[in-house]
Image (cartoon, rainbow, N blue to C red; front, side, top):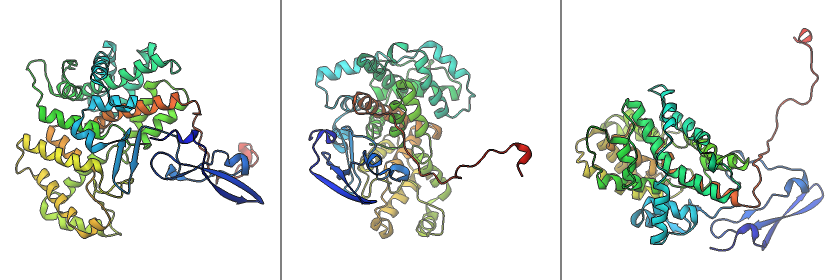
Amino acid sequence: MTSSAANTAPQKKAILHYNGKVIDLPILQGSCGPEVLDIRNLYNETGLFTFDPGFTATASCESKITFIDGEEGVLLYRGYHIQELAEHSNFMEVAYLLLYGDLPTEAQRGDFIRNVTTHTMVHEQITSFFRGFRRDAHPMAIMVGVVGALSAFYHDSLDINDPVQREIASYRLVAKIPTLAAMAYKYSLGQPFIFPLNKLSYAENFLHMMFAVPCEEYHVNPILSRAIDRIFILHADHEQNASTSTVRLAGSSGANPFACIASGIAALWGPAHGGANEAVLNMLAEIEYPGNIQKFIAKAKDKNDPFRLMGFGHRVYKNYDPRATIMRETCYDVLKELNIKDNPLFDLAMELEHIAMNDEYFIERKLYPNVDFYSGIIFKALGIPVSMFTVLFAIARTVGWVAQWKEMIADPTQKIGRPRQLYTGIESRKYKPVSERK
């Protein structure tokens, strides 16, 4: 990787002519990706702002963590291709990589796992928070509240200017989020909370806390735990998406790390972000059976029909989502291990995948099945309720949020986020007493 773009003298510049002035705008080059027009001084030079709803053409920060090439279907974590990490690594190694920049040595990996697993339990008083929620409360609503409340219990890791406290907060968040997630699930069932077992791996521990009960011994299936581990790897980070940007924006104000991650969970809860795999199952329920597929394919092709095939295509990837290939293999592994045969939902999903992958309409438009298409099917096969789908996404993404938050806090050039606006409201007017208003 080359040196930081912000610290590299720009080799090129763009020239803006405005109102009789000539303004030089530096062009920055990252180690990967397109060149970036530096407009930081645009307002000072011209009095102009830029207008970019959704920030689709705006780099909000400089980062060394994740890179996406949507045209080529490439996803890199710290320079490593996601396919290699999913095949050869595990979530704890990937978490270390995202947080520290390199894959760990054996000693570093052991220390990191110990540091995370010693923080898997939560303060006993936190259990009382759950009793304040209705049993049918959405687990994401619970997660937003309880994760934010962690700051009320762990005062020794709230000083963001202390590197040691930042480190402790990082361990706590990565370790405790699965525990809280499993507690949210158990609460919805009326079952007792299951304590973490630190002898288990990260994914094994989560499955144990989700599905074990005190009256029986629970054995974690290695095929299923590997599937969850892969899902966590594939969802660990994804550049400056809505929830990650939310974490950075909250963090830019100096908010404590627990509040920042809670804000990311809230953003992830949105159906346009973290709820896509749930939308896939809703779509399959609407299609109902394989004989209806062609009818719904025709509806998807009709520009005047509001129906859309959920789980196909991606806003960033204009090629095959590199995560989807791995998720597809994992999906088949899970279905085979669970010996699921002649299940209408899974048969329907696999038939829809086959038809869409061989239909010229979808091939030309590169509307391939994405990671959400397969993850929802896996979760359903594992017996995880739809309401928990986004929670599992949050577990995986927490390490990415923490890595992004740490990077932002350590950046000496970072400022509080303060987007501008294009105001189109009423101009200045005089206040009138209520007796004069008509």
